[in-house]
Image 1 (tube, rainbow, N blue to C red):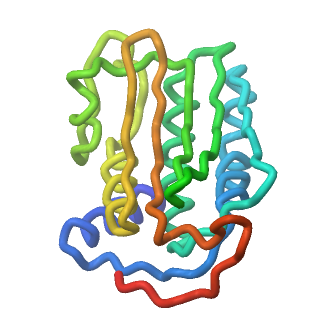
Image 2: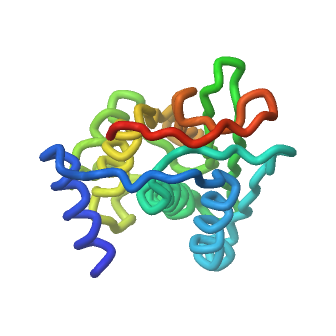
Length: 192
């Protein structure tokens, strides 16, 4: 219940332009691993394999650790929730040449019809389909995640089709990346 209330409060603040980032240098690997630990029991209970292709070099980003953790927890919870028994959820991290970072969460879940993808980013909306009808939730996770990523100058995008699973791209812009060409850049203030 507390988690739902916090999501509602954060979403309300984000939509009113009042959600402020508490930024610091954070490890994407640590955030992803801590989010995986939280969803691991549910995944094991449902017979879902979790895999994280850990890159050889950590990606340090300048971001709000609590809010970024919330994004990963929301996305991973959805991936586990909508993946049938025996399925898999995998995470890869791609540091691109331009300095942007794309974290890709891929599941073998029930998928979403392409025409419904934008709808899942609206608060309190759940896609009504014969496949999704049995899944509970508030419909707040993805709208909040989208707002958090926009506040960070990034984005969250979905690729999906029914019965084929979903790929979620959580993208951070180059200015959030603290590790460029193997050199750690000194911290500098970002305006929120």
